[in-house]
Length: 117
Image 1 (cartoon, rainbow, N blue to C red):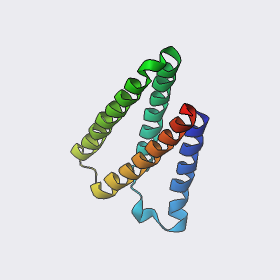
Image 2 (cartoon, rainbow, N blue to C red):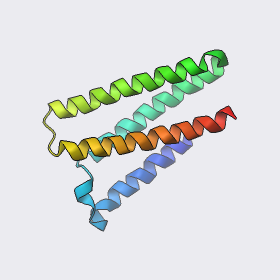
Image 3 (cartoon, helix red, strand yellow):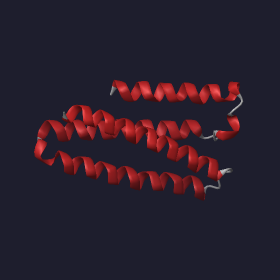
């Protein structure tokens, strides 16, 4: 869990300093909503994996695949809601969303790979 917090703080610092560096045109104004969304999803995914790993290791793969499917469905719903609400610069929003999606997913997979060794 500490690694997820460190990742979120690091990404938050990067978001914060994009305005000072002059790269704010590549980052959407709802960047903090996206970051909070991924932190919440990662936190709940961490709890689910901890529960699945502690109770019965035989069903760990089912827990993990189920969490991936739920995350994907919730992510599509998140993008759909912001798209429906008429978010301006929707292409920047979606690109920021998927960059963070790949960051958090690869980070979780690397952490999971370490646990399974």
